[in-house]
Amino acid sequence: MSKDKIIQAAIEVFSENGYHRASMDEIAARAQVAKGTLYYNFPGKSQLFKTVVKQGIEDIMQRTEAELNSPLPMKEKIERVIRDHLDLFLESRHFSHIVFNEISNGIEQEVLDELKELKRKYLSFLASIIEEGQCEENLCRAVDANLAAASIVGTLESTCNYYLSHQDAYSRDDLEQFAFTMITQGLFISLE
Amino acid sequence: MSKDKIIQAAIEVFSENGYHRASMDEIAARAQVAKGTLYYNFPGKSQLFKTVVKQGIEDIMQRTEAELNSPLPMKEKIERVIRDHLDLFLESRHFSHIVFNEISNGIEQEVLDELKELKRKYLSFLASIIEEGQCEENLCRAVDANLAAASIVGTLESTCNYYLSHQDAYSRDDLEQFAFTMITQGLFISLE
DNA sequence: ATTTTTGAACTGACCAGTCAGAATAAGAAA
DNA sequence: TTTCTTATTCTGACTGGTCAGTTCAAAAAT
Image (cartoon, rainbow over all chains, first blue to last red):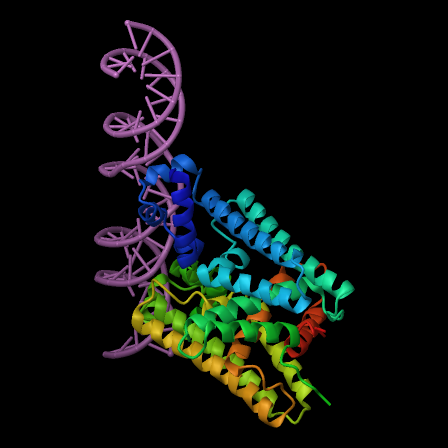
């Protein structure tokens, strides 16, 4: 099936280059398919992009949900959720940018709205997990869950980036441990 | 002086669109200057871009340094440094992306290297501040200062973004307070 | 007189999207 | 099984548009 090959190639190319620098020609070449086949299977670039994003978000949400439903202690759960996110972000370098930042000009309003909705849904999903933890577990209740969700994604994204360009200095494990500490404890300043 | 007008316009256009979608025609129009003048003052797009990034980084470093040299308590200092960063990021929506992410294809290797060096310099600058705090103040020593610097920038960037699309729900002050809490204390989980 | 600016015209590259026709699969008839 | 027919899937050259970068003669500013 060409459709699958195209989606896989699109994930790669979009992840490597972001939306605007990804070209349909390269996606076609990577999928070993003629350009026309892209347009036979998808109405256009933005629709193809939407499909890719949707798949990525659904995937990470599913993985996260599975971890959270496991009968593990909270600490373990958080570690695993962080690990899943790092997996995704390291796999698809620019996936998070694409979803969280690059959604803008050059995409039809209709598709743009769908993408924003996907993003919103995902952040709410994370926020609801945090809120739950604030009620039932030992999460600090002083922080806003929505902002916290955004912040966590930002932290994971930027530390991934840093890690990718300094792999000599850090191991994958360092990255995971750091992310856990930073997210749960921050810089841990005891002021006054 | 046209040069200044061009730089200002370039900051705007690059910040709004990122590097690749920013067009020299629009920069010229925004600066109310002929396109030829751009090329009279700068060798090309990438050089102009470099100038803009350089100015932005030098600006925020200078502001941060000034705050840190003030005779204020540590807590106050950190709050101010965060505020400065939020100012910059909110002012130039995509400035941080540009610097931290969008540096890639389509730019000559030489300029690319200079940009990466600027970015590195800035992160080291932040890291050195954190390290100093870990020695002399009450910052947790368990976190790696470089990763922490990257993480902080990521947090600020993504929360800014979230704030910008939810200004109805949050005030600028909420944003500042949240960023401070998240950076210094994280989700503050007391596990077990 | 020298420097700076203008604005328009042009080139070459890139790229999203199109389309007429080729290839392939699927099913019906012989 | 083999042949004919139709529908689906795929192809790749082509189009039209955008944009960076160049050039330059003439005008304006210093």
